[in-house]
Amino acid sequence: MSIQLTPLTDPDYRPFSRRIAWLAADAAGNPVGSAFLRLHSRDSLAHLADLEITVHPAERRRGVGSQLLYAAVAAAREQHAQLVVAEIGADSPAYEFLVRHGFTIGLTLIYSRLDLRTVVAPVPPPAGYRLASWAGVVPDELLQTFTDARTAMDDAPTGAISYGADSWDTARTRQAADAVARRGEHLMTVAALDESTGEIVAFTELVVPEDGKSDAQNYGTAVRPAHRGHGLARWIKTEQIRWAQSRFPDLAGVLTDTVDTNEPMRRVNAALGYIPTHTNHRCILDLTPAQPPRP
Image (cartoon, rainbow, N blue to C red):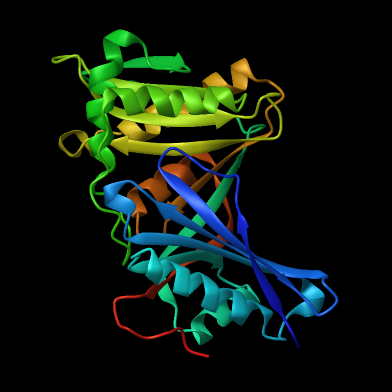
């Protein structure tokens, strides 16, 4: 099958990343597939390139995906990326495609959903902690301690994928919340503070669609290492769910994803009523060896 690849300028340009793209067309000029490669400018992620490939179902197994992959991998090398990352359903034929081309599993994510018709009972506050919650940008008096608490994510399981140290400052904390607001969505944050120091030691973030309907997305939950084992994650996630149910009565559910090896968080989610929906593999192709993907 004769395929023509056309490089495209992708308008999806973000403060710390950009995408390059290709459109695949047949001999008659009909689009049959596309590929997007996200490149990161933040130092901790500059070695990674995130790949998405889509081929029209009627055109699969004709070499379209392979040609798109070769173009994307070549571009990743030119941009000095060391690892190409592609997330795909564990049971998807596309997973077999990636394996044939030399990809391996970097980590596995379990996606789950909580039906907000579920009655979530309140959890007694763990001794020595108090709750804080806010919508949108964090209040000024909590800005620095909330930014500092982001380090609780540093030891999150990442499998065989190194994401490096994710540096946060107060400007980035504000910028992240502003980005959600610009999309018209609602950011809801619940945090636990150590009563003896006033510092935030745990937090969980939820992003709700603009219309307050369909499903919200959990953006992350973290507890600082010295404060783990006290039930803080379940406490703050419970309060967040109950707040969302009260503020957005038409909200249908909450979505989350958890690395399969993160047993503590999986237990918390199960106790709250989350039901696994599907499993994805985040597959990786190591570009360190000077080898192309396998044909």
